[in-house]
Length: 135
Ligand SMILES: [Zn+2]
Image (cartoon, rainbow, N blue to C red; front, side, top):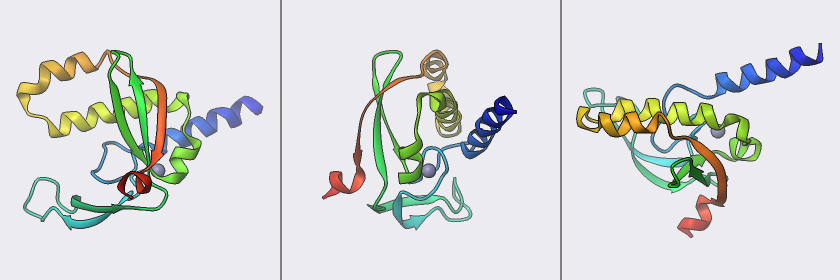
């Protein structure tokens, strides 16, 4: 019984990590983390998605991670996802990042992308509220 409820929580989490990252949105749930000044037109590359971003939302958080290869990467989360962020989510977040790269990169970047399959998020190094960065 208890095991079931734990597994259920895991499934719910995975459903909350959407397919690809959208510009200006939370890395996990796609909630807007910045005001949108302009969106891609219907005939453009990413119809309806944010094209130009304004100031951050109040609780938008920038989290800096250490990756396996020693480099660092910044991800943006909404306040709710930043608060509940834990290492058990790192794999899903990295997979979503890889899918996003695949959507946006040119074919010439493919060799670099292949090396990222072995990379991943190792640990959080710090976080800051986007509003404090822009203040
Ligand atoms: Zn979120």
